[in-house]
Image (cartoon, rainbow over all chains, first blue to last red; front, side, top):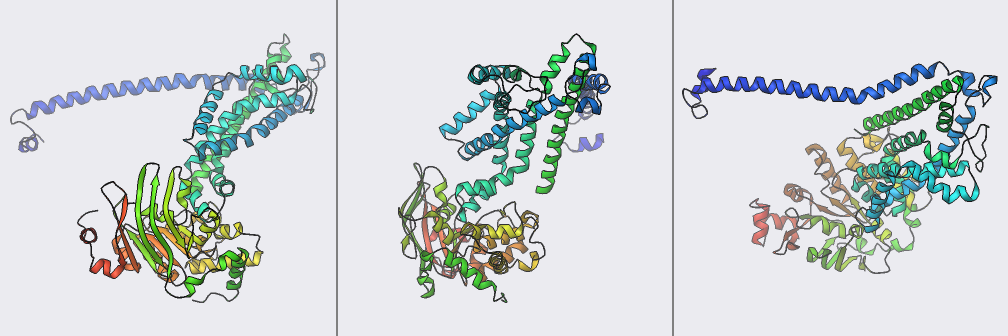
Length: 304
Length: 287
């Protein structure tokens, strides 16, 4: 080994080859040690970062699972003296609120994303993108307050107002993810449609959106997951309710609000129910995220 | 070729659907004539002149190759022929492009009709994320409601003419993106000819394909030239020499604008170029 280094002449100064080699081995050891150290550090940071998630999931599961039963899910509100009842009214309420929010935000969000993706460098396109960025950074309670002054103070608390508040929170997420997905579609695909004489709107509906569809659906699910647990804007808009209600113009129950109410209740029964609701919300969000993942992998397998 | 006799009338039905305007096919029938004529055509993007003062004719039922070094405006010129440059903000055309004597940039011209008559095949195969059948049927469906049987006829006829029918007839419902690269490109050709264009523009149609698939496309082009006027942009000079009847050589001038250096029969351009720059380019001395 030494000999061959010596023989290379130009690379190793004669006589110093051995020393250099030894130094480089030492250098290697130092490098190896610092590498291990840094790796350990990042590993530790990762563990510290993930720990709260695992802890929360574990805690929520342990405390919540015992209170969940079919009866708990299917029963409506009852006073604690009668066993406390269930959360059917909140499940229905949350479903309605999610449905309303999606109904308002999905078409608006997708159309906005189409505009921004189609005209990325126009002043309006840039303004809209900046606007959605600001909107996504807006605290949810501010959105709730906004809808409160705009709708609730005139027409009272309602499911509709809650749906609008959640829709505003979903909108920027939908716009950004949809825009990103649309931009991944090669421009030549759109051009192929236009070159056949198709108008732009038909190209968008029949070629551009379908080509990005799975990605868009993934984004929609993440947007729903993101607002599923929103509480602050619902306090201002839906008020909450103990009754099973499907009326859109009346206060309505929801899982996060019921959780909030039960968690601060002095009754032990209510506290246990709050944990159960927490588990349901976490499961819901988890399922949406896993679903989004599955769709994303399914898409990538289909494409390549 | 053994195209079924049933398929042809269905295709003609489409042509009549598109209205009386398309009935003007006179030049092609009257023998060799200029299908498209470029009259002092310049294309500029805002202040940048990409193509300057090009004057040439594309002849009916001939294949014309546009060759030249990168950035010389070949693609820009090609995309001007079916007004695809309209989609680029700031792009403007000066001069006239005549299709059968009609200026396609005249104010009252319907751009949709221009694109129907002048079809396009792109550099990378770009089938829609739809089935093979729906890819081909996409264009015809744009131009009116067709009966299922008529549409079936058009799809089969187009796929046969694109030399793809035998390979895909059992998987018409499968995604067009599941085909091989060469098959995808022939699918794109089938899609383009399904609307019965008169001119087909091809922007480096083989640059993303392997040699075998390339050869297939080239054979197909020779077949298609019997019915269509074909303009192809290519980086591959052997390809231009193999398939084309006429060759136009473009180069950047001192202002980086693409200009036509020489235009003539392919044989003459490749064996006896008149311009020194053409000779240097085709012998590989630059570019």
